[in-house]
Length: 248
Image (cartoon, rainbow, N blue to C red; front, side, top):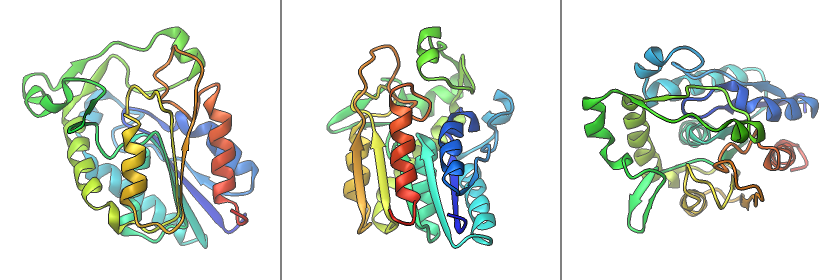
C-alpha cells in the first residue's frame, strides 16, 4: 500500500497516544501513517483553552494536504472528536475514505432526549462562570483496560462549547459527504451516545457505507476508547486495515 496514506486523528482532550495501536497496524500493512497532535493538545490546559474547532480542523486539513501531495490515496480515520473532524474534512477535500470510531455529530439532543451529561446544554453559561471545570479522573482499573493520555481532572469549557457548535454545523451538512465510510461504535458508549452512529450513516451520501456495532463484555470502562480497548482494539485494527487496503 505504498500509494496509501492514513491520517489518524485523536479525540477531544486526548493525544496521538490513543491512535498508536491503529497506527502500528496500518504501518505494518504498508501504509504511511500520520498522527498529528491537534492544537492545544499534548501541551497544557491553558493552551488547550485557547483553541477552537476551526483550529483543529485547519490542522487536520493542512496534514491532509501534505499527505495528498505525496500519495494517491489518503484516508482519514479518527476516534471520537477526531472522527468528527475527519467527516468535516471530507466536506472540503476528496478522501479515499473516512472511518469514524465512537464519533459524535451531537453531544446532546432533546428529542429524543440523549446526553452523557445533563450539564452539556448549559456549557455556554457555565463557561462564563468557570472556564476550567474540574472533572473526576478515570479509575485505575478502567485505564488498565483502555489506556489513555490527555487532560484529566479538568475540562476547558470554551473548547467544549466550540466543539458543540462545530458538531451542529457538521450534522446539518452530512449530506455533502460522499467518501466511502466505515463507522464503528459500541452500543454501551457512555460518553458519545450510540445514536450518533445512525445519524452519521443516515446523513452522509456515501454510496459505500458500513456501520459496525462493537459489543464489549466488561462493565468497568465507558466503552468509548475503542482504539486502545483490550477487547475492542484488535477488532478496530482489523476492520480499519481492511477498509484502507486496495482490495477493500
